[in-house]
Length: 344
Image 1 (tube, rainbow, N blue to C red):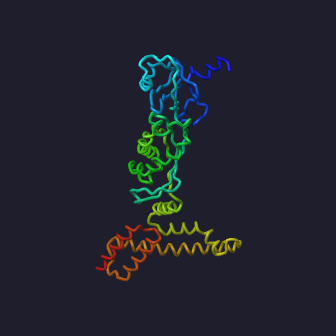
Image 2: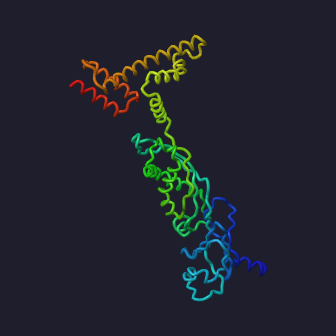
Image 3: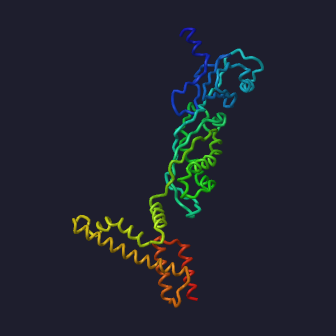
């Protein structure tokens, strides 16, 4: 080995990182057996920071720019190495580069529905997902708390931990925002802001900053969504329960025809299925209309001479409406109490 090759192997004149791989948060400069020469240049590009670590102890931190390494530019390292004057010989130290640019389009979401308190429904099980960005904010803290002496630390290494922190603070964010579930979809920006504020301290504890969080979707599990759709449909129909039940019966015609074995029987089969569906709709409509009329009468002035049997029959019909999910427990209890007063 020639003298020039020996010198190139032993001494480092320029220390830099070109970030050839995406998603790297921290990267250790590969010194091998080489040493840093007095007056060597440290090149830190925009969106980077460099940290000197001596025997496990964090020393000097450098921002973007070209830095000449001397005892003046390395005061903490000079103190750790007990240099009392300009050093003339090469020295060894670990140098870690950190990427401070935004790491974009990181995904978060609920693998299972999360139960949340809600103003309208008391409690709901919610699914939600979106994306966010994260950047390095405190390299010293990230080095001591997360990356340590690893040669490289990537966003992928942190993905599970960061998503877990977001989901952990999801219920807190909903509670702090004060937004009912029915309004969450229309207030996703406010929801995202509340979630960012709730999770920010946990990210800061790792030396990171969360940015650009979005909530792309908030939804209920399928079985709860069906109940909500029915409640919304009833609200749109209002007091005309007969029309609502007939509409539901019409929607169920294909299922009724198939269940009765008439689905594939041509015109006769279709007619039979249609007749069954209309008959079912009429029976349900009449039953519910009678119950609602009785409930309406019970809330107003009771007609003269109302019989106890009629009051009990009305309560039974209201109980049936509650069982079908048309009346809530509170609505049923209120109507029942009013009717029982008529027996006194």
